[in-house]
Image (cartoon, rainbow, N blue to C red; front, side, top):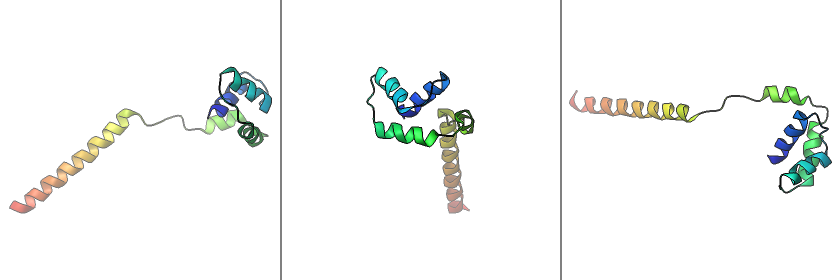
Length: 91
């Protein structure tokens, strides 16, 4: 993932995305450099419009509120099922 962040940084700064530049960014941040990953990343981005790729990335991610709401819905359904089961006993 750090390789992708380095790539985005270079792109934002309008610098060429090369193995050498990516390695410099990672080394300056104190990160380890895996040249194989860098070569693969550079090769996969060759000829790609990075701005267009960024636009395709979903910008919303689930939040804790969403997770809590889902948990409450599940709890309500369980309670409804339990009440329905009890009414069958006395029905």
